[in-house]
Amino acid sequence: MLQRRRCRAVSIADKVMELARRRGFFWASAELYGGVSGFLDFGPLGKLLKRKIEEKWRYWFVLRNQEFVVEVETPIITPYKVFEASGHVSHFMDYMVECLTCGRKFRADHVIEEQTGLSGLEGLSEEQLTSIIIEKGVKCPECRGQLGSAKKFNLLFKTTIGPYSENVGFARPEAAQGMFTTFNRVYNVVRNKLPLGIAQIGKVMRNEISPRQGPIRLREFTIMELELFYDPQEPSCPVLDKGEVLRLVPEERVAKRDLTPMEVAVDEALKRGLVACEWLAYFMVTAQKFVQDLGIPWDKQMFVAKLPHERAHYASQVYDQVVKLEKWGWVEVSGHAFRTDYDLRGHMASSGEDLRVYKQLPAEVEVEEVEVKPVSEAIKEDFGAEASAVINSLKLMPGERVLEEIRTKGFFEVGKFRVYQKHVNFNKVKRVVKGRRFIPFVAEPSFGAERLVYAVMEYAYREKEGRIVSSLPPDVAPIEAVVLPLVNRDGLPEKAMEVYNALKLRGLVVEYDDSGSIGRRYARADEVGVPLAITIDRQTMEDGTVTIRDRDTWRQVRCPISELPEVVEAYVKRGEVKGALRELFKQI
Image 1: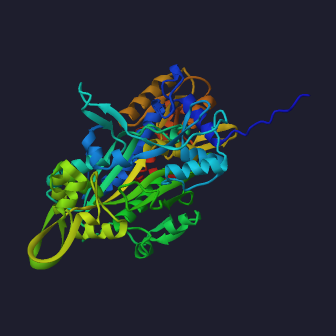
Image 2: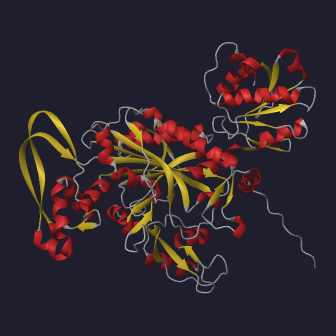
């Protein structure tokens, strides 16, 4: 008996991915050899779109804050000691599970989530994950075979630096450590001023176990990251508008598996401790506006807190900024971490360098401080040859911080060392001081560029009268205008080429297209998101005007060639339109 096949509805995600491959945005890397998951090639249009998203991030996070934010560039390959000091060698893990039948390996929490609908599995131990797999009957996604026990897998890409196998390095999994290791240099360059933001855009690599979500989970991607260093005794952010509203899912709701966001003013969020510090709140507000400026509505994004067992090892609070995608649900596009002084104190312990900041006081004052007294015998017994490094590091640590963390967490982590109550004593001492030394606290916003490329394309995707229209924000559209001679005769191609060259000289990204009917050329331009199509027709030869067609409305207006470069530039860069040009803009 013949059975009817059910036609699977084509998702927006499928359509966007097909468009991305066909029109040169992105596709799987090394396609000639079957591709490799977790790596993408960006074609001509994708590279332009990604670069413009990076530039927009630079505008929102660096250029608007250039009185206290600078940008640097540090290497991708980083020595072993850096990531040992930062805790990544010990903590940067996911849990892997292997099929006992086909031998394929998967990320344990992802397989469980996909087959059971359970969430919040980050931070569970091997034993807990294995227990869930057995209890829920989770099988291999490929062959339905039995899965083995969950095991730790370090996500760092390991390499050697030079010809010596013992000279181990890693491809950085985040750009942050480059900003921490260069903090002292940059701090001196900016004449010892805090707050200080150090930003970086660059490639990072994470050896993901089984990335299976196209551009959403990659092994190599571009990170846009900023570390904001500030005095913990002066935590206020002068550029924060406390009346701004955040869409938050705080820890209390996450713990109850309630992901309904609350809309709360920044001032209230800070007072209630929902957000740990003003600088973190400032970057979360900025992130909302930045993502909205990319075409993703405010009500399609929110910040979801990480529970303590889910957070990265360096953070005391983390919010993931997530956006709603049609196929993958709520997907993280940025992380906002309160890193306290964790990283700098780790590098102090490992390098032996004093990374504290000195601040002169207006006058001598008497202060009461908590002084750390290392217990040498206990430290030597537990740390052996590294005991002196532990003792020297503890002497530089702020006593209040060491005491607080031992009381709340049971240990104090400094680089690769964990110090417990038995290793330290504390004294309260009074001193007369002219200044104070401290380790700055750090708030961090961190974005993945590739995820934003996909999210922007999905939210821009439209179908109108049987055509695909990519309604990208004009200032991130890969091609800013297309020049079209109506026909290929009567001097129109020559005039069109003059217009094309004039726009190029203005620094615009312009395409010239004379192939096929005018309707087909409009459709090609709409599909890849070109905001303006400029048609040279017979009237152009008579009065020196051209037709400007808007991508989204399909409305057309005429504009003098002499004013065209200014009109196009103002439109696609969202600049101010002056004089008579205002009326022209209103029409399109």
